[in-house]
Structures are given as structure tokens and as C-alpha cells.
Amino acid sequence: MLIAHPAAGYLATKGALALGLGRGRGLSDRTLLAVGVAASVLPDADLLYFYTIDRQQHLHYGYWTHIPAFWAVVLGLAAGVCWVRHIRNGAPVIALVALNLFLHFVLDTVAGGMRWLYPFSSRGFALVRVPAEHGHWFLNFIWHWTFILELLLWAAALYVLARSWRRRKRAAVPLGSSEAATQERGTAE
Ligand SMILES: [Zn+2]
Image (tube, rainbow, N blue to C red):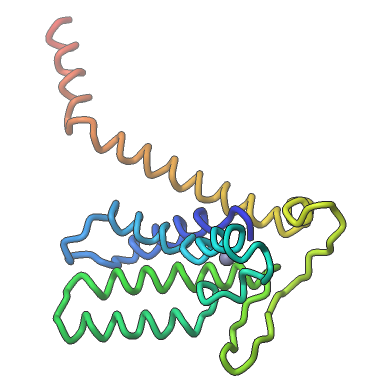
């Protein structure tokens, strides 16, 4: 996936928060939303290494940043530390990071090549293979039908974002202000 990760991360995190994840732990929804969206794009930070140091020698799906087993171990260790040290906020943050990392890997399985079985197998799993029909890999992805899925995820994320902005704006209007205005008009008449 090229552009869908932050949109999918936003939708997944909004859904998790709506279900009550992190409620009563002293963490604001805004903080958790930022954590969720950051985790949804975190694996692709390896593109920096891919372009600068590795000079495109290996597929970035093979780096540890895209290896589910690596993150399972890291998240398991983090959960253990939070449990031993009684860190109250740890569980929702770890759950949110896990949700978004694994959502990233599921989306990368559509047309990428995720090594779900590593270290037991280095086979890259992908639902569809994007043919190299254009000059640049970027164009191959943009002109492939899977890009429609990415656009749909963005459309859904923007819809949810606009709806939550509208709600927040409505909530910011002082309670009873419309009735007060009506009463004021009545008195004037
Ligand atoms: Zn990725």
C-alpha cells in the first residue's frame, strides 16, 4: 500500500476509542489518536534506510520493521515491563500500537509481500501481484486496481474526520444559546 496506512490507522484508532479503549486511564483521545496514526505508518520509516543506506538493494518488506514476529516480541516485552512495573497507561497504548502495526501488515499483504512466517520461512505473502507495466514501481501501484482500495480508505477517513469536526464544533456552542437567542427575540417583540 502506498498512501492508505495513515487513513486506515485513523479509522482503526477512532473505532477502538469509540469502543472504549483507554477510557479512564488519564490519556486524552487526541494523544491516543496520535499514537495510533504514528504506529500505522511506523514500519514504512524503513524507506529512509531503503533509499539512503541500502540503496534499494533489498525489498523493504524484508527489513525487521516489516517483520510481524519482531513486533510481536517487542510488544510482548513492552507489555511485560508495563505489567511488572504497574504502568497503568501501558496496556491501551500497547494495544493501539499492536492494532495499527498489524493492520499495516495486513494492508501490505494485499499487494506487498509480507513475511508472516519469518523466521521459519522467508516467503513473502501477497494477495495480488502488481505487474511491472510502467517505468517506475510507483506508477505500477497507482495504475493498479488496488489503488482504488487506498482511495476508498482515504474517503472513509476524511468522512469520519469531517463528522467528528462538526460534532466538536457543535459541542463548542454554549448550551442553551439558541434558546436564549429565541427568548431575547421574544422579549424584544
Ligand atoms: Zn509497509
